[in-house]
Length: 437
Image 1 (cartoon, rainbow, N blue to C red):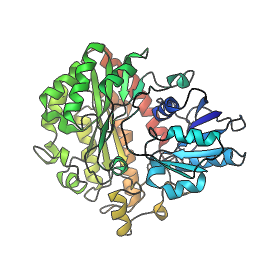
Image 2 (image 1 turned 180 degrees about the vertical axis):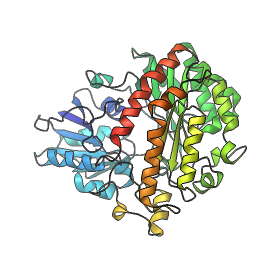
Image 3 (image 1 turned 45 degrees about the horizontal axis):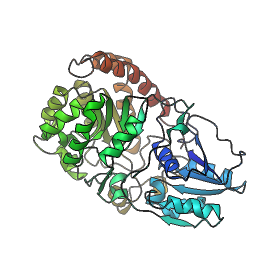
């Protein structure tokens, strides 16, 4: 039997800064060794639809849903069975099932062997219901499938899944029902030692959601002498032992969801973990000093378009990011992801645009507003969020932000990270704006 794994692009966009599709490498690791497995990444290579295969598995992300359905249709018209999984299949199984022979809901660890056994017998079920569970127990990622593809030179892996917080706009919170699942530290270390790289990205939704679990991992990372990054919530700064261990373990920095600098906006989105200490524009001052003292190169993530946001507040957020010389920053247009609390609220208020399904609509474009904001027009929100991204990633901004001797210029390695990746992200930010999904 031959299994073809597909990672769809956003529309027909060719990405010059791709990272390895960990989910598909992990899925290949669950697959019995007697099954031939190939991987095609739509973001950077053509898909050979006419190549013989017995089963196609497509991971469906919300932004890539339209393209996922196009790919599935090409295989199905050739008589090839298609199974779809991923975040979108779990959040909207009824929609996804219209475009596949079978769908997989939730995580695949416990039931993927059943999918393969059924496919071998030609008896694929319409629906397989997995369960949120520990990542990759007793299984390593099939990294040989990434060879020869132009991915960034950083290895992805996972220690934990989910997040205990309840942010209203977050699809992760809905997917995992506010729970967190951890892989064993020993298996995580084993996977890292099996590779020939020393720079890693933990794709955890919040690697410090459980401080004690994170500390246990960081202690074991110290002897490896590696560099790593992940995603983390800023309340980690209230635990000095955690921060010390994080720095000693080789952490370069984290993607941190600041989302807003306004306390009333943070309260409205239920992001209470950001509200400890002072509120308002200076809310993050103490936390940012702690991050700098530990040398953390922060990727600040903001969402703009919340009910208290205005064009002026977006400009203040941009000023805040520039003043703090963040290594990277994202100014994401707030999007109503399906089956989130935000989506249900906007739907009840009649504020959704594009018939409520922006991810499928012919006229929707990447980073456009998909709802009516409270204090500005949809066009104003789209324009202001793009202005923030373009300004932060301008050549002048890249030059001025480098001069932080605690973070970006702390040592030659960190300076190299800054100088290599900022031009890449600048280019990708400008190219992606307004593309068709």
